[in-house]
Image: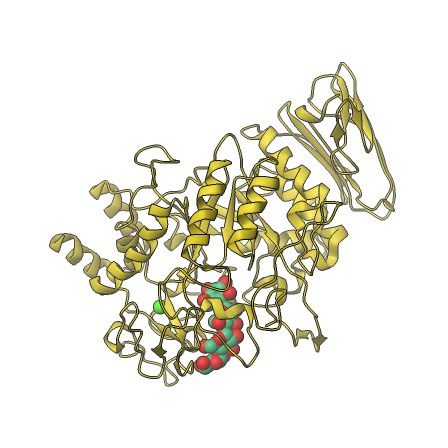
Length: 529
Ligand code: QV4
Ligand code: CA
């Protein structure tokens, strides 16, 4: 361990990830995993942002299991600060005060029960792990925490871990404010405070052990992996040391020797000193270029046209597909936090959103994550949402409301439940049905009408032009009558929406009015009558 520690330290400041990749190859250590360990041919992850554990458990059993979702990304499960100004913002959960498993979403037994119930119906749990920092430096001291634990931000004292001021980076940071001031300087991006958040000294074995202890407790409860928050702000060598400390997944639900799935939040739109490539040998990385570009294409901004996406994926400068986790929007950029800008499409633009999410789920690139949001009282002044801080639907005491399910299968009380929208739910199933099939049979009109297949298992057609689409296309699929899973779905022996008749030569006629509520059509092997 001494040699290992020394190697880590000396490479700690390594600029290029190449040395790391060689080191790991030499040491033959696989510290982390690019495999989400999804079960039974499932593929997509849904982020049930701010949901309570009891509601997630119910949703796994009543909806996510039966509809083939691969897993759920849950909000940070550990104890966090509780803030009054602004009042109970969603982002208080990104300010840890301990690793006690109690938060706005529930307590440890509710968490454990949810993980078990979701695993038992084939739905994995991925934890949003906030390990770069604790709460903001101005977080005060007292018991204003989700489980009443005392802490002091001003003296950097978190007795419940415990962490003391020795466990933070302030002595390393060389900026005047102690905060990150210049994203061109990799040293301050990693060793200074991100928006004032107390930055943990992750080169210390003591801190690495405490972080790993927190993550291993979750692994032993049955989680399948982690979305690691703010990875840009941690040295790859430190992350490697932490991931190397992680247990294998519980063999109650996963094969022996399964390594935790790791997907690392690194916002890299280019132009900064730090790149996502520095992390991709440790696990997957969030590809933020994906949603930013897809939004620009579907909004037809900057002269983008849908037919340019013929080489979508690495052809657009994205990272290799085996390293990527992709999404149309996330909890930050759907409300102007983080990166992606105005091009990001969200549930607020529902017609475009369904097309963009449909495109993402139909295309083979990356591991896909579907956002599931809550509605808030958006109030945009000079392009900035004054209410971007608003937390989930809550009672007057600040506790999060349950998720009511309406008779029409939508959610009530301000929960948007995009993952339950027929078009999105059916495209999650589409992705499962075509899993492993190549991108094939591309067609376009040199404008914003395109179509492509997935081998002989699926085919999708988009009309994002301002005129009708009326064309005969080679679907590559066996002859038969298929239900369009966008305008409806197959129910018993009938289609509730459009029917597509594929002829013996695999060709079919497609007519999509640009005035359609959802101007796209999708068919797959399991929507065939
Ligand atoms: C403010 C000032 C500071 C000052 C501080 C004093 O900005 O200069 O020092 O007060 O305490 C909230 C407030 C922020 C406040 C901070 C307290 O918004 O104004 O600082 O708390 O220190 C979320 C929110 C942030 C929020 C944070 C902590 O987005 O607004 O900050 O939680 O509550 C970069 C990163 C990327 C990051 C992205 C948002 O590279 O990793 O910014 N994304 C992840 C999460 C994101 C989360 C964090 C990281 C931090 O996805 O949700 O930030 O955990 O691109
Ligand atoms: Ca840091």
